[in-house]
Image 1 (spheres, rainbow, N blue to C red):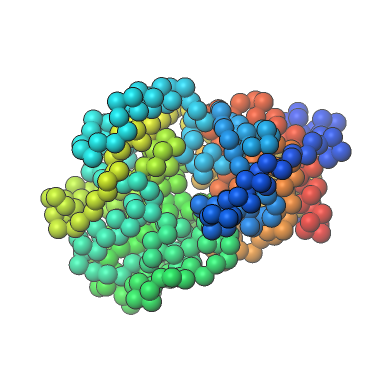
Image 2: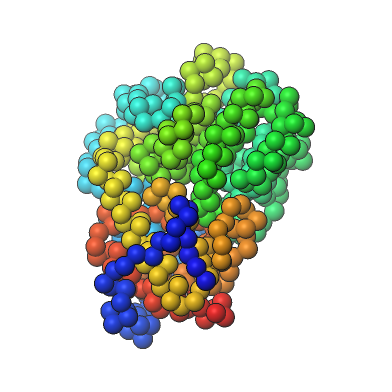
Amino acid sequence: MHSRDARGHADWGSFASLRDNDRVTSATTPTTTTAVSQAWFERARAVTPGGVNSPVRAFTAVGGTPRFITSASGAWLTDADGNDYVDLICSWGPMLLGHAHPDVQAAVAGAVARGTSYGTPTEPEVELAEEIVARTPVERVRFVSSGTEATMSAIRLARGATGRDLVVKFAGCYHGHVDPLLAEAGSGVATLAVPGTSGVPATAAAETLVLPYNDREAVRAAFATHGPRIACLITEASPGNMGVVPPAPGFNAFLAETCRAHGALFISDEVMTGFRATAQGGWGLDGAVEGWTPDLMTFGKVMGGGFPAAAFGGRADLMAHLAPEGPVYQAGTLSGNPVATTAGLATLRLATAEVYAHLDATAHTIRAAVSEHLQVAGVPHVVQVAGTMFSVFFRDGAVRDFAEASRQDTAAYAAFFHSMLDQGVYLPPSAYEAWFVSAAHDDRAVQTIIDALPAAALAAATAGGY
């Protein structure tokens, strides 16, 4: 058994708290209570499909009772039963600064006091657009309310600009619940093993080519056969919806060049990685260094500061195809909402170089501790990294695509998850998701995670029969 991070070298670290004589045993581990959350879940199932408004939240993949969270502060969540948890989901990425950051709250309170929605242009949306343009290679930005809207609109724009219909995507990459993009998608589709095209017209699915990720030959073959019909290729800048699976060195540059050679558009989906993986998003890990840019990009999560906000953007000539300048129509009543854009603007302005340095250091410490304890327990695993994002696959060997991500021990992960949860650490309730830290994860939060690892690693080893 071994562990390697995405940079290709051992990532174990050395911490005094990891020594055997400092480890906490399962015998001293408190168990959380769930009676109130269970009661709320039963009420929810009576009025909401599955009792949740986004599938992974239902704990279907790991079993047990989903926790109903009543409040959050800094790095901590509090549930309806009064249990506190160190949060390693961070609202699936947006809470870069931690929960209830006082400066963000103050900015939002001021915005709410002035009104919550106008249906008109506002100053904060212009300022947030300027902030995004300053951090990324896009020249123009259009705001929407969700990541799904962002990818849907980017694809419509690509089709309108090229006059073509075919879309290329990769298995395991999740781009929201847009009809043509659910085929072999990651995130909840992977977690629940549901058919990705259920409810999607065959005509919509037929306009999507799904390729294995990190496979240059498959891309070459697809463009050689279908090049004149391909409107765009869309990919996560660094996939995080099948677990973190970084692009092979030069892969994104290859995609950009291939699209350019065939007159197709390259869409980099940064809904998850944007301003999270680095200050410049996933593009900061390769494009900013290698000198290439996508034609279009999508953003969400961090840029909304915890509010429903997303965006798509790109070259000025492409964005000019959008109404009212051009013929491609896109609109939204709450697009550019003043409260959401104020929250996003405050978050990005507070996301300094010091914040990203703290995220890097904290993520490294946690990765190293997790790997150390799983190694001691004899649990096969690999830790993979994309900037400040990471995930742990319960299998041996690097994961390069969705097929390899699928070959992991999900039972071992479920046991690991519940042991951590019982000890006050909230991990993603799925083996196919990224882990996130925030600027609010301090020494106490990190130590709580480290103290929970021995029992969790033992639980994983037992469940996996290692």
